[in-house]
Image (cartoon, rainbow, N blue to C red; front, side):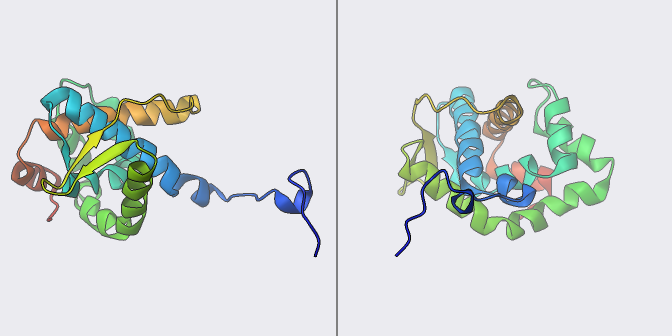
Length: 170
């Protein structure tokens, strides 16, 4: 049996762009940052159904751009209005949430298993642990900051109003 050393070229796996973006490790970081923002704003955990909205918004180009361009104080309604300029982008959040459900689930699981998040099963809420993860690239830090802002916005509205604003169903 041949042993492959870590330095051999066959041991190095080249990930596609899609695999680098749609992976549970990045997703865990983004959901954790959203849970941090949610907890900082409202002192309570992020409802589990709301956690399934983070990746469909953060990993979609137009949604991500609107998220990063919207000021923290503006809120979810202004973010939705910016997306509403292209109504199909706003309406597509629900379809993307369904399509990314397994990635969101894997990301939440990864975050819980690595002690980034605590899942309160009785309340169906995610509570962030205060940890210091390795420093990600500047682009990922920027995306994490945007997700933290999204978490803050989600804490300001009841779940029914979030669903109405973003045109999603839980």
